[in-house]
Length: 423
Image (cartoon, rainbow, N blue to C red; front, side, top):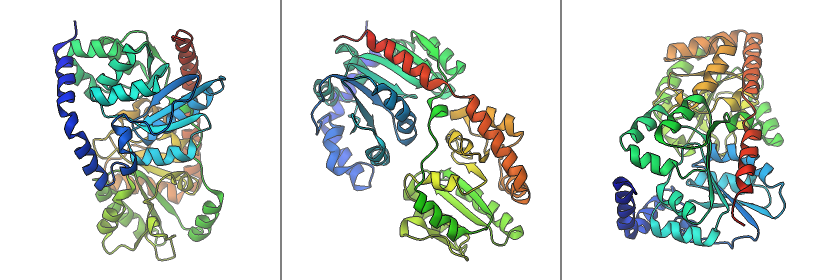
């Protein structure tokens, strides 16, 4: 019997469907939707379904889509197969347009209303659907299951907060999670929570992000930035979130009293925050990359409010503060920095990548910070001793390498699932 909460959800989403176009239009006006592609959000495809087997992969945003790229490459080694990648953000769509291989293509995820989902499923008819990380959309899952698609949760993560939320509706959780043919969890904690909630065929595969290739960097831009920066000491704050700059800026003030030519590079997780960060800088001399600037001799803070360029700055700096960790976001992925031999520091909120941060900090023997003073002290230690920074960076890289292996485990599990997919 279908749980009442699930019936109520389907009724509510159906009732709200008529106002969805207006809500999407409002989001488009503030840059949160691509106005030209709003039809996709309503389940209306703008390209035909390719012939042959179609694997649909969904990742919420940039991080999940990047984690899926190596898996997409491997899945496309099979003849007569295509991959549809969906996501829900404009930034991820822009990035995937540049990076998806041939035989793979991007569409926006339809909103989770019965009508939009039905249009999407009727057009694409996926043979299998893989949901990356923690994306659970009941109407999408029910529709895919009803049409015979094989379902998998890959790179699965179930945080304690999400687990407690689902526990308030145990029958609904069990009904939804039981739709997956296989759940591949990042770690034992997530696997145990998924099992308790009713998921079946749960396996621990590790995190796909540990197997992702190093972030790319344009060599011409890298050479230009390197020349502009010269031998100046660098303090890099990567993927920062709102509420963290107020801690980072006093740390750079303290560091700059010791290192007069210090250049602080702030790369916000959401580039649209560049203007706000520049305002917070006040009288500190800052420039924004989105305005076409490179740092000059008197630049104190360089705000990199552009998309897809973090790989450049990971190749220039000896260490990085990882954003999303001073606020209750859960931390950004430290593997991207560690893989390029940067020493890593982060605040107390790293539950999104708890296993990864534990491994990196254990290898480094340091890295946890909470205040401006902590950040300045750790950064000052590494700036004063470049050999120590290099040693910690190599330790972080070894920790990142030790966490690999999820990609092949995921590929094998998905191929096994596809062998049992209907023709």
